[in-house]
Image 1 (tube, rainbow, N blue to C red):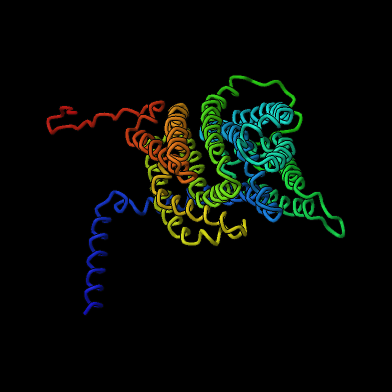
Image 2 (image 1 turned 135 degrees about the horizontal axis):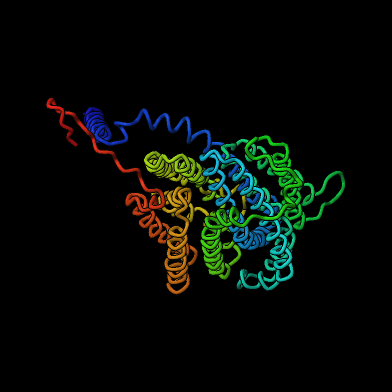
Length: 497
């Protein structure tokens, strides 16, 4: 009896859901969306997903390799990397500007402008990266004292050692990021994937040997993790320059000699017009994120380590969404370059809903295995408990993630970077920092309160970005062509419109 009742209930529910789906706009246009998914989204998003996985794993595996040296070593890497991510985010913002300008230029069949944008971005950011590396290395002790807060002296010493080693990888990271962004803008996502995959493999091999030794050599210990990461990044940067030099992608053939030619600021400003607002957004956002890490720094070594592990696991869960966001930037930029405004609008909405549904399924499906993920990083029971709580919280709020992260990526493809900058600043400093401090420190909720502040940031960003998408204001720079009146001829020969 109960079996028949359950079967009938399931059947009725399925019928109701199916009828509701069949009335949607998506169902009526499902064939065109299927074509979009397989012909445009998948060829871009899958290689970007794999590339982002390799980039993320480079940092995750550096943490994993030092995790067996103790939770103090892991906390040191976590604190130093939280600062490194601010700098990398700055490079990634200029990389975004390069991607958009290259995609837009090639959409307008102007490869010369695309090459100039890629070359000048590489030159400028390499110079900036060198100066940043020198300045941060000299000021490393002061930086660590600020970001480490009340962490133990041992953790601070390890964080300083890792930071002062990895700062010298900044020029290589800038070259790899911006070169990869230019290639992605030209529609070539496989070469960045191969290069970043190679860097990741080299990082594992070189860092393992430098940390733990080989053939009787005892290795360098903790210092080897930062040194291995730096060496592998320089090898990747050389690979990017070589690919651009030989013209593997003919639209982006850049000779070594051309890097020494004067910069043309009209083209460079086009890149920076997107990159500067995006970089301000990224630096202030990651600066706020760093501040919230400082809240955690005074909560004990086990909480610092657990918080860092949870962020690493959450970043892995978010990888498909990040890939779809990057794909939406390219797709929107390319469509608008061709003047296909309606296509850009429809495709961004499709990518957004695809991300929302897909990430929610992934997050809810992986949350029960949070303890297993934590065990890959640490054997400490108190650290694992922190990780499990935070991963379950992350899964609960995942349905709003795509609205706060995928949508702004698509808006930037339409050069709507300033709106994204202001909203990100509002979300970070008006919500995440204030709410995180209030809940985590003042009300004593600890690291859970800090993460609840982060989820409030997601919600505020998501509301504004979703409104921006459905209002159509993100396309104000691209006026739609006016519809011509339909003219008919009557039987008497008179024209009527």
